[in-house]
Image 1: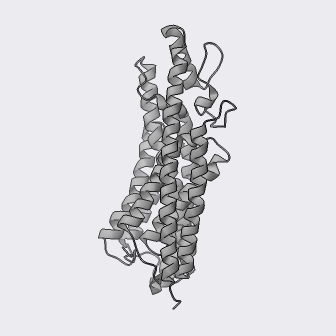
Image 2: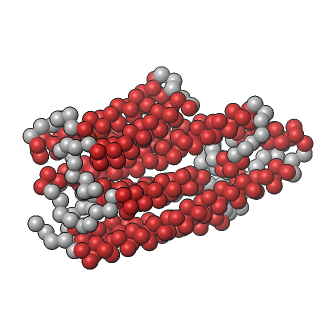
Image 3: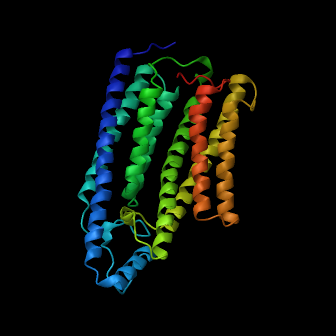
Amino acid sequence: MPSVNAELGATSELFMLLASIAYVVALIFFVLDLVKSSKTIGEVEARLAGERAESLARTQVLAGGGGGAPTLPAAAMADTSMDYSTGPRRAAARIAVALTVLAAVIHAAAVLTRGIAANRVPWGNMYEFCTTGALIVALIFLATLTRKDLRFVGSFVIGLVVVMLCAATVGFATPVANLIPALQSYWLIVHVSIAVASSALFTITFAMSVLQLVQSSREARLAAGRPDKARFMRMVPPALSLENLSYRLNAVAFVGWTFTLIAGAIWAEQAWGRYWGWDTKEVWTFVIWTVYAGYLHARATRGWTGTRAAWLSIVGYLCIIFNFTIVNIYFSGLHSYSGV
């Protein structure tokens, strides 16, 4: 059995702490961007002439722009297509993204040194799964930023990354150690890596579904002529745009989760001599697959759009959280090797 480098493991923990600090600072700047942009929106609205002009401007914002009365600057909000605007630069958002890149680099060094210290892939227990999952969430978020302006969701996504790292270091802290025999297989790399990537995508769609619910409620208030109590949401595209992007990302993640389920069954046959044994972890993995399958089917063929689709997506992610925390900690079974 390969030896474990405890000193390098301690270095990995130091990197993880530095990454957490950088993420927290990035989160602060993402929140500042929302606050500053909300203030800018208020100043623009104050210059609109009369209640009717203001009402028309709000209608145009919700409709994605157009001719007629003046609208909010493109730089102050993400449009329906979520493309980057050519308006004034948002300094706080740019700093937040730069800090997220720095944090992700340090975070990657932490995960890499953890793997080198253990002489294996660094996702053999809940601490490693959580820290690696948080890294994938950050990397996927940064990758999407190269194509679409999703900085409006940065405070929510990076907030979830911070929560995941806090849970890992406080609740699931585990010293560097060798794997138990059942995990010493190349299927660990295949099965868990796809599960981590899929969970990361589901994390992003969860944040977008929450924003969709908030934006949908706000749009209903504005349509009824009531005052806008969440002006920072002007940075966020319409609820329908959020729903469409969330649906596409969930479809990709669902394919990955399907492969996770299949790969897990193949690995179970090699490790325990059966493909399926109704182990608690196996059951909840299938429950998650069923919920997201129902979400995709209901939206594509049954017309389940709007808030119903958002709630289904949220329920699916809550099942993932339950599977990762409650099932791992409180249910015994063949998968009880989380190292908590």
